[in-house]
Length: 239
Image (tube, rainbow, N blue to C red; front, side, top):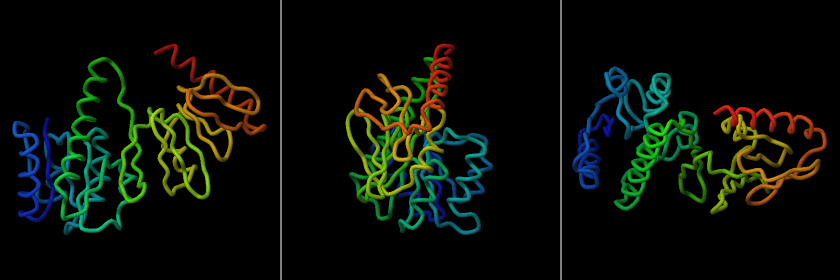
């Protein structure tokens, strides 16, 4: 596993490297002084700590260009302000750390990133495709949620509530944007609901019953839902 650190300030690079080595002393750590340097690298790191506020090319632009080359690198943004947190969603960032770093928070984020990296490798070794994560901000915390864990989502009082089998997570956002990111394993049967086909137990013309919870069905969407669900099951049957 290779862990990268991209920051124009030497003292910050050294600080992050020191923290990484405490947790993972045997891993390969590579430092970059600019976004251009990392984009020109022959091998991209598996996990990357990326500063946002850098001269010439900032971290956001670096991430956008990096994503054209690889969707696999796990990006953890580091910055002195939370002003860019929502932009980080657009480039599939795993997390967003604000300087100065709290020791326990840094450790938690890096350990979660390593678990995701190792989990992805196990899935690939077993012939499974890696499924993307959704980055949200809930109650002041930036959380990465695996889309495959989402049973369904609903809109309530200007908030989106994501339901997994274990918990409910709410955040300020738009259902339309979530639906676009979720992909073809999800369907929006009603303007207030988005369901994961993988968790459907049964359905009728008014309601979809899931392995946890249920969602409303808009009358005008029923026929299209049935066709979409059948196509989904056909795809799953061929895998």
